[in-house]
Image 1: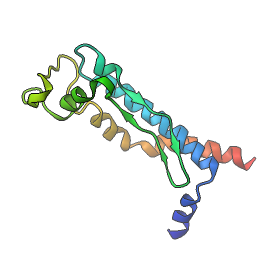
Image 2: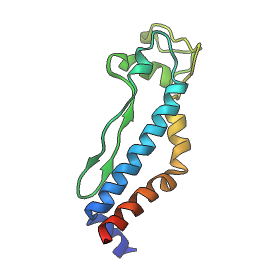
Image 3: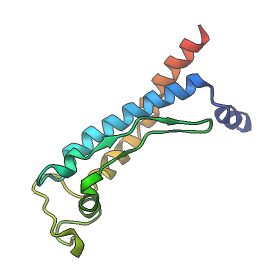
Length: 131
């Protein structure tokens, strides 16, 4: 186990590239599903969904997925609170389309299959590197 951890800590560039590609694919899949679940009033929140490019350093690869921008406070209100009990500062929350936990629900579903999404990308990069 210590050897496996040491190998991952000294992550070869091919593994980094594979992880970045796989996590980006997972992030895009999550965002596609999250947008279908996002409440729509004027569309500002729905349109604020973003998948940020992979950030790679020697110890980790990160892909951020989120909503916000001009709709930041509204995003928090509708994501965290049910329609019947919005916070007073939210100015009322309507769920004609979508509902709360619009990002969390697809993220949790995709977490179960993340390895299956990422592994082919890593294997492809390792094969390329070994040629």
